[in-house]
Length: 264
Image (spheres, one colour):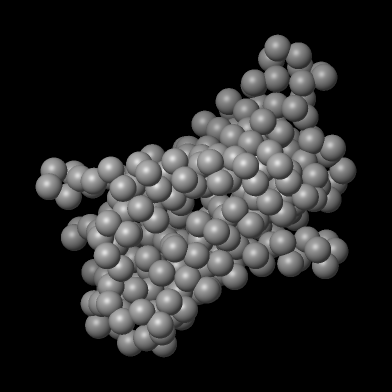
């Protein structure tokens, strides 16, 4: 990997770290509506990135060979990504920030703060895979995935990682974790992204023929996070319901779409 690729892989992690640093400059916990708007924004970015940066390039790669069946790698990879995240969700004990009960296998030895971080780690794995497979497509010479397009995806993920970093560090501070530990937990939750990206690039080098499937796999994994976690967090239920998350989704989707189409 060249220097540009390495820097690109670190951009999303930088976004998470800067967001986590909000714990030093903000006194109070994030307003509930602000948090919902940010969750919606993150969902919008991930959906747009999945479509324009992952699924469409996956189909473009095989269009000449497969013709009208070019949807096959996209469909197979997408479903595999959903199943993979469903598996992680069921085997890793975790707890979402706005939830009172843990999910996955019971583990009495894990503290609530640890399970909150694990929930964000699960969320960040598909983002790391998405960035990694995009850079792999650019590195291994597939014209449908350019280095500029991979950088746009990394920047888009970083934009939505900024509020995510704050969403993990600020609530930790609110439940009694000191600022420094809350910041460290925040950046650790994002550290999985460059790791997942590097592993994906290494595997892609071995499995170049199935790169379209890997792109679609990343899209499916990100869609799982959007539907399972971000949209419920953004909209709320009952008296907690608000439309601010929907507006955030629209903003994130449009911004990422513009970035991808104009620069990718």
